Image (tube, rainbow, N blue to C red; front, top):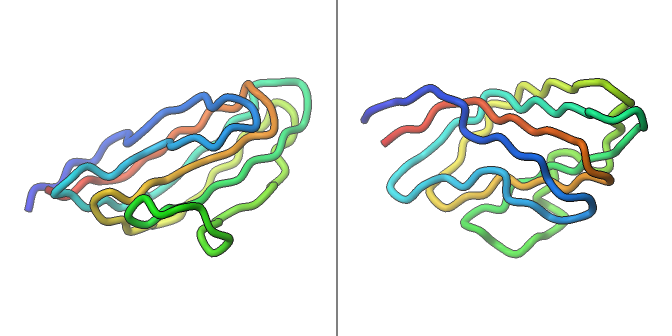
Length: 109
């Protein structure tokens, strides 16, 4: 099994819109080691982060963070160690624009 350590995804989600940030490719597993969420605006924001196993419909059980505060011009570093299977989705929702999301980890093929 080959392992590729890399930036898995980068996103600039639209405000108040559920956004798929990363999809595990077919015939692949992934470990998300960290997620960095940066607020590029001068106003506080909130964010949600969740995993949809096998692209399932959104449910309350999937949330990793829900309406978590993101201070103005600040960054949150999440060290997660999430283990994901093919077709699993890492998704986000932000209260306003100007939030960057970067996902780091390894893909196993």
